[in-house]
Length: 393
Ligand code: NAD
Ligand code: TDX
Image 1 (tube, rainbow, N blue to C red):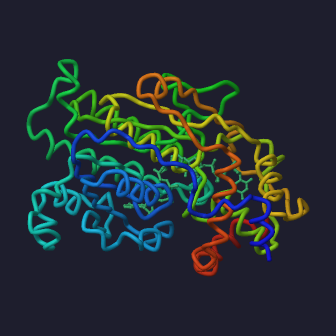
Image 2: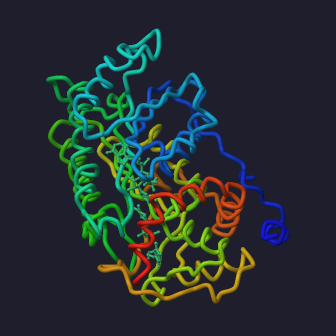
């Protein structure tokens, strides 16, 4: 019933996006270690890369926390260019064995074990939810800071050995290895203008403080050891596979169940939304053309107050605006994020291609088409979290 109404309203957009996926230049085969690939952005990224680069190998290291879900990757689990390893990025021994190739040999993952040693790291693994970091910051410190340092150190040991490379001589020489740290606009704090890559860092939540610490470690490994690190800072993503603790999937799934949608404070906090595939396209380009030691902001310049966003969402879903329920604000709630993307646009030629309206509709349709995916999550441990977070708010 809901589905038919929605289809009429959205003029036939299906859950499989109908946007064209642009081709990026294939420069050389790569062996990727993707961490946190069973989460929202990581799983979209793995799908994207498997489709776009027929000669890239992917190893996905994920701890499978509450946010990690192997169902997100079910369709590619038998792809010979993809393998999953359950493990923690803060586990020095395991991470070292992946970089040395010992892990692949010991587990007979491939007849030619050396080939799988990573020459690229894309670090998505993180505790990613601000509200959870307010309840307990400890896992954020462990994964986001310590875990990143373990990965950096393994990359340094195995990529550089005892030598360091001079980053000023010829950065093209550093291209074979890239450590890409997937960071966030939240490291800059709240703004009335726009943040460039030069803006001071001013994180306000335990989550963003931990991501900032990781960014600074990346900077230190570049400056001190010349490890070829690139940091990207992206704005709020929307799209398939997002865990329903975040605003958009929480609102979609609550609306489908005719449950209230909690809006913090006055609902006038502003976020800048980007479709997850645009983020993946940008990361792919950064891997191929980005300069070691650099930071790149990624955003789509689609700012919305939370209230505007939910009004629009309810409209798309043909649900009543009366589902909106104002609740107590998030402590330390950042008022507005906004990024200046001149650098990635000018230097790498990246542009977002997905409109907010199209992305919102495609996302709603995905949740409609994947009801068992989110119902399974919402009926499990997540129900306890939801109760703790919202029942007395
Ligand atoms: P997510 O919470 O959906 O996924 C995180 C993944 O990391 C999960 O699969 C989880 O199991 C895994 N993980 C957690 N701790 C781990 C550990 N110690 N070792 C190995 N794996 C571990 O997060 P997301 O929204 O996909 O975000 C991915 C990355 O992108 C994060 O680093 C986040 O800070 C960043 N980011 C997210 C957004 C956004 O809007 N969601 C925006 C900008 C940047
Ligand atoms: O129930 C809610 N009600 C509400 O009003 C929730 C969950 C959120 N909000 C508000 C808080 C924010 O202003 O909606 C906005 C978006 O909230 P989240 O979805 O929790 O995202 P945010 O805090 O902006 O952080 C996200 O973007 C940056 C990701 O979770 C981070 O991982 C990323 O770094």
